Amino acid sequence: MWNRNITGLDAEGTFRSLNGAADENVFIGKASKAGFFCFFKVWRDMPYDAVLDYEHILYRVEVKGSSSGTYNLTRGGRSGAQIDRHAENRTRRIERSDCDFVVCVDSNNGDCYILPVDILDITNRKNFGTRALEPFKEKWQLFIHDDATRLTGSQTRDGLLSLPLPALQSVATRIGAIVPTGDFRLPGTTGLRIADEKEKTILAIWYKLCEKGKNKEMAQIDIKTIEKLPKERNTVHETVYATYSTFDSHGEHYVQLDTYGRSDREQPGKISQSIQFDRETASYFVDLLKGEFDL
Image (cartoon, rainbow, N blue to C red; front, side, top):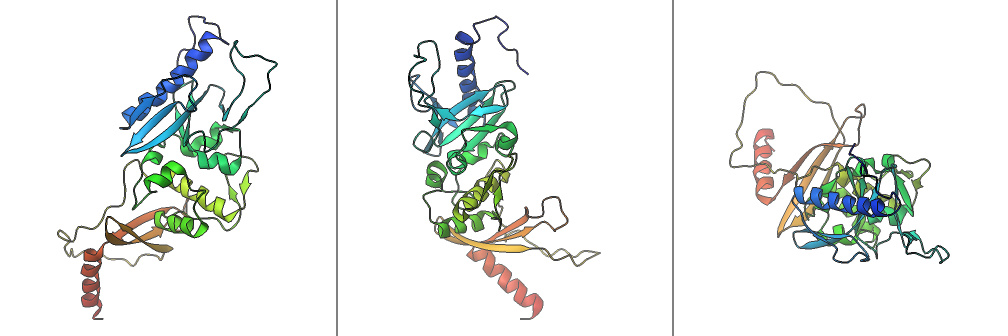
């Protein structure tokens, strides 16, 4: 917990503004430490608070701070002594036209929750609590785009709602996201379920991206160094669920095999191992398997 207003500033005036500016600076500092270039707003009433740059893709970011554990994800409300309290309340939910991501900052300790606006557009929620935001805690990797193992730059920035369902299903398969057959239940919420197939697929993709590591993943086998290593003991492994996907990146075609945790594991649907093959690697293993099995 950080010290709060130990100087006794007016809680509803000066300190409120100062605390909001501090939350925005927490975002800038953490994003910078994560290795992103950030640009802060030059005018108080801009429609978003900052711009984050990753490999020439610019993201509009709105920062929302809270010390209560509930984050108000709206804009257009009345605040400050200069606002006429009798004026019409124009509060509305943050949407795609406002920004690309909302970063919720815990004013008590500086924790950041990286929330894609797709989540707000699908759930139509005007507020989220810390429990619902937990999967997005410090998930700075959501800003990283990668045609092979994540979303493209434009998909990351513009969201997924404009994509047709077959394209979304292809993305889900490529990154290993599993779409539930029933309703998608948002973690940390009570009774919030999504039944629409397209929206379920989008949610499955974003939540899967939250699971992925902070750096670009998926190592490929180096066939130049691979060698046969005899072992003293060998066991036949249990069978597990597996999927494969294909994609193209930088002019190369790839096949990716994913195996998943056994049904008795705590997270049975989570990918446990992934192997990628390009043309050269695939040719090497085809020849190897033909020789070993006399095919």
